[in-house]
Amino acid sequence: MAAMAARASQLITLGAVLVLALALADVDRCSGAQDYDFFFLVLQWPGAYCDTRQSCCYPRSGKPAADFGIHGLWPNRDDGSYPQDCNPDREFDPSKVSDLLGSLRAQWPTLACPANDGLRFWAHEWEKHGTCAEDVFNEHGYFQAALRLRAQLRVLDALRDAGVQPDGGYYSLAQVKDAIQQGTGFEPFVDCNRDESGNSQLYQLYFCVDAAGSRFIDCPVSPGGRPCGARIEFPAF
Ligand code: AMP
Ligand code: AMP
Image (cartoon, rainbow, N blue to C red):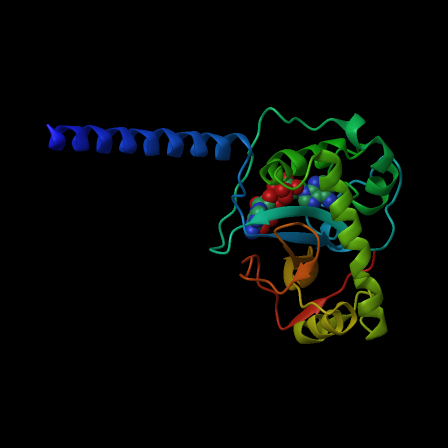
């Protein structure tokens, strides 16, 4: 009899543990538990986007400034994988970033053709990447964080201070990385594309940001991307 009672109490305890585990799993799912370890902030040199066989279109607001723009803020995992398209219920809503539109036009310019106002690019970035970081950012917070982080780096100043200019000249990959490390305190991954003649050129810079989306860190993993030659062109824009 005592053995049966003990067995019954064991089963009840087991049941309770199971119910609790299931409830916790559900809370995790609903609260969008963090499924990444850090972010890549990806900056883009517009001259290199445009100086390709595919070319580019300036946004309706006009030619963007000759400065690094934002491509995206991408949640990533330490093993190199990344989540994407995490919440189809959170479509991009421009009214939620109405106060940021001027800054987005200037610092996150679309260069896709046909010419447009940028909403498509921002919607793509939010829906593909931003919705995977809803534990730290709502839509407004996502765009605001990327703008703030970009402004903090002042990458073009770092390059200019070291004599690396967007003048169509060639620089060594080490020179580019060292200049940015000196000026910003962080060494980016450099992603190159090719101009119409096949020359390797400075296209994108990957910086790493902690999982809270608040400060730069040394990168836990390389993003891969296209290898640069030892000498890379810094095209004018
Ligand atoms: P990923 O999927 O970033 O988040 O974005 C890749 C897509 O963004 C590709 O279709 C690219 O062609 C596009 N893309 C990259 N840079 C820009 C840009 N400056 N303007 C518009 N589209 C871009
Ligand atoms: P790529 O072929 O490198 O231009 O990458 C195409 C698209 O894939 C990018 O625009 C991103 O949206 C996505 N992607 C590539 N690598 C990563 C990464 N490490 N983290 C998040 N998204 C990535």
